[in-house]
Length: 263
Image (cartoon, rainbow, N blue to C red; front, top):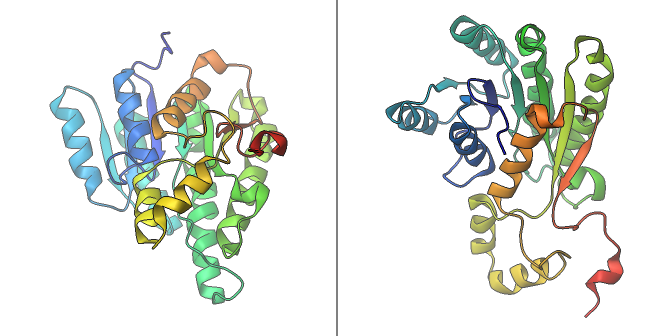
């Protein structure tokens, strides 16, 4: 299926994670579709990723940005505007489940809110003129934690809950400009960060098995490539009448009947 993303400028925050992370995978899939990926991240890996794409003849840009600092986000938007002048899609992907629970300091809680939610607002605010110009759309990457809770991560849960609220607020606010706003809900995805967490556990293999058997569809983790494919479809014109939606990519983990989990 031709998603007609060729030549489309797509900004992805949190795009310079380890190879195989969700942001990096989204960028690779965008490049394969002929889109122009703009990577926004604080990690210098972004320079390497952009150079790798450029060496393949793909137009790509890395804008080094601390996404917890809205002044840097504003400056980054100006860099993007100077080079491309428009944005066809903004994928707010950055997120860290940082464990800022009720026992965390207020400073740690606010740091979590800044990175995991305020960055979404700032990116959207400063990119909005370019989105209006292209009649582009917004896709926010969310988490099941906002819907189910997890324990010990109040900052992340609050931030991701706020992201869902912003998703629908923007769908309403921007409808007059023809700008769509949607969110992807992720549950258990086999990313490098997830594997690193499992590797820290004394009973990591047992813990992993206990998790995957609770995922109804095929009893397996969601792969980053599956999330990336859903992202590309959602930002494409193939989803031209979809807005204000929370699209769950999780093998039925969050929403399906618990009776499916009986052994």
